[in-house]
Amino acid sequence: MENTLSTEPVAKGSTGADKKKRKPVLNLLSPVSPRQAIILGIIGGIVFFLIWEFGHFMTPEESKRFLPSPQHVLSTLYTLLTEKGFLSDIGISLFRIIGSFTAVCLVAVPLGIFMGCFDNMRALINPVVSGARYLPAASFIPLLLVWFGPTDTQKMALLFLGVIFFLVALILDNTRAVQKELIEAALTMGASRKQIVFGVVARAATPAILDSMRNMIAVGWTYLVIAEIVAAQDGIGAVMMRAGRFLKADVIMAGILTIGLLGVMTDIAFRLIAHYAVPWNRKRSN
Amino acid sequence: MNAGTQTHSHSSRSAVIRSVDAARRYLGGKFTAVENVSLDFMKGQVTALVGPSGCGKTTVLRLISGLEEPTEGQILAGGKPIEGPGPDRGMIFQAYTSFPWLTALGNVEYGMNILKVPKAEARERAMQWLETFHLGDFADAYPAELSGGMKQRVAIARTLAQNPAVLLMDEPFGALDAQVRWEMQEMMIEILSREDKTVILVTHDIQEAIYLADRIVFFTSNPGRVKHDIVLEFKNGHRFARKEEMLKQRDYAEIEAQLFVWMREEIQKTG
Image (tube, rainbow over all chains, first blue to last red; front, side, top):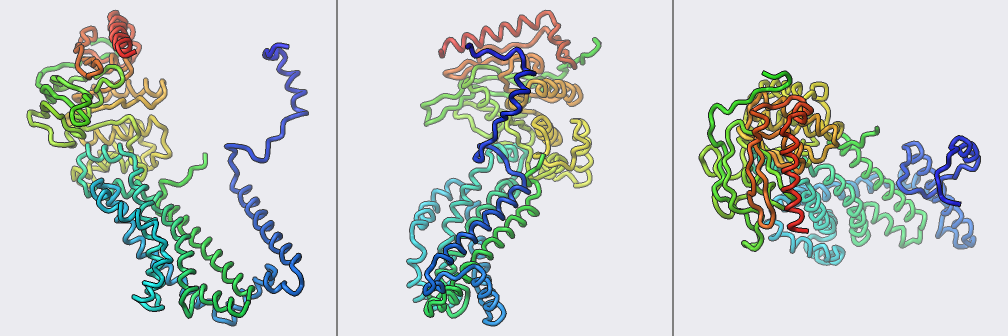
């Protein structure tokens, strides 16, 4: 039969309702409500712990202590916090990451915006900066140990080197992505270079810059742990490394869990900062 | 005076903007965007620059704005050569340029802050401009909360609040849907009846050009040059508050047809 339009839409519709096509689970361009997102997130978390629990269950009895159960890791974490002074290690790690990431941002944000605004400065600086991204920061560890010894400075310097070149590159991109017409509009209104760099480009790029910072602090955690594993008496990484020497898998896993939780918390902190510092960029629900 | 029309007079005929044999070439002269442009833009006159894509009409506007410099010839504003952009030549872009981090009110104040208008006065004048553009209720709204037409009204209000001698408009309503575009055109007529601005308008929309302009400059492409320069005599100095009043004019269809013929010549030339 020809593929013509039905002349009886009502009749068609009533039969069609019974065999209404179910939406596929993987549906393109199908948004998820905040409530659904929370439920799905919780399900994902439960599945993760179930897999972990299952792995523990399947492990032969004599090896079980190398893959402790989630409950055991949580109770180890509790003991660490209450009896072993783990809180001060967390504090030291937080001090290192916040200190060095602040230093990174103080350099990378102005430098990235500056390079993004002025093409000749970009041409001057960018080859060095983008080339430096290919140097593995971990390869600086011996040099940093020679220079600073196993100090806080050494650890913060490693984190600084590991993150800064990437953050500059990201902020350069964020700045260059600012709509050209915003700058031209400001120029035709008689705005000065200073007014445009600080009042137009920097402000227009702020949401993207905060996103870049949020993504790079996650990388910062990686370098912090590397630094603390290599040479430290204190900090989360040092605690884990010491535990490793005594094959205490539960302590190592408690440390990993702690870093994960702290990472999520820094992520949330950056989202809150963005929410309040850039109210004009909030996703509007309408 | 006819009902629904405003008489518009050119009492003092002096060129506010004068282009003297201006050319803009790129790639060290290998590519010519526009050349041999000698045009006088008179005080209070609304001129539409029309022509096929790539005819250099936007380039001419950008040369006048000072965002680009002519490679040959000269462009004078108020008798002096143009040295870069300035608030005497306000520009409206096709892309939305209202600053997303400022409220509608903040946007309109922005231009006046640059001109160091005292804060209280700037606020008062900004509110008046928002009222003029029917945005009084949206003073505290961010551009993300406004429709395309409203964003463009904020941008125009912001520019006019600086009281520029010349208003440069680059496809200002090109991104808007047909109905909003029409409303914006009538709003421009309303504003122009009060402000008596010199306006240079780049548009693809032939009807818009005829409706808003007193004069139409038609460009040809490859290389971009002025081909025709006509004054819309049939309007006889009137600006029609309602678009249909203009459409009813006897000579309107003839002008529109003429512009289509010129456009077709250009298309056939390149195609």
